[in-house]
Length: 167
Image (cartoon, rainbow, N blue to C red; front, side, top):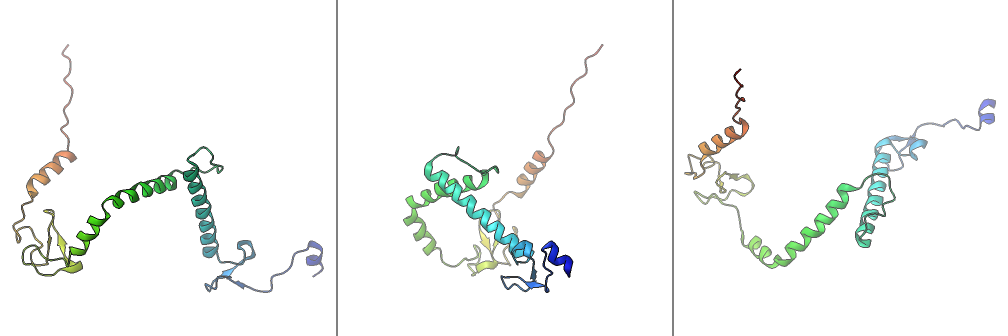
């Protein structure tokens, strides 16, 4: 008892539950959180800091003012790519919304049966029911033989040895 007073350490009274009430036990090293909650909190904090710096770089238009030692390649590219992609649909958003609204239920291309989410898409680009999903059942125009030959030709390139010089 005297040794704890001298060293300034306090004995723990018992296990401490996580402050996020997840049901696991926490520790004082992880701010009274369990390891999973602490890891999630640190990850969210890092993502928020990363987003703030990348947004600041985009607004300022400079990428040379990065103060972190870690490279920030992927999020900066994703943010720029998303901003570029978001501009493209704005030009034709009226046309896209009308075609999506008129699409209606998904139907089999052979028998016009409603297939919904259970439709099978074929290589010919059409959607079929379970009866017509095979290529011989719906007279598929896709040339499977030529596709297989091309795949084999790409997978097995022609190997030709160099000719030897005769002495």
